[in-house]
Length: 149
Image (cartoon, rainbow, N blue to C red):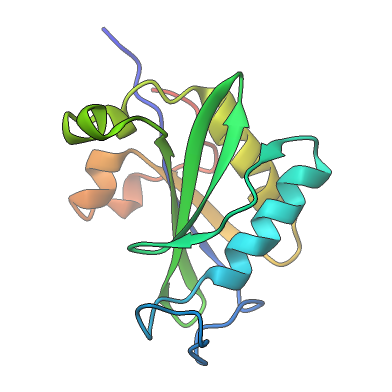
């Protein structure tokens, strides 16, 4: 039986913009660019290889490398101080269509994201969720760490 990894994180923070749309926003209420930039800086300061680009698409995302594999971390605002972020494996177009973004995510990648979120005084109430639980509204099943189950 394969082990499943918690790849979706919910957390709270009032340190980032959730009220003032920026000129760079494609979608006016798609907040999280400043949070994503902060995450990129924090990961780099820990020696994680992070791409230079920040992109908007159903949230803000950036690429990072863990264990020789490229991932995207997508983050966006849910409500005033509520945030959602998730990890996707960076794959080609066809593999993406076949669900490849959700497969092959290693726990080390999630632990690198968790280290940033869990160690900052700007972030609180970090909870990690299995994708299927989160999508089904079962957030109460979340845990404090992303470890595989």
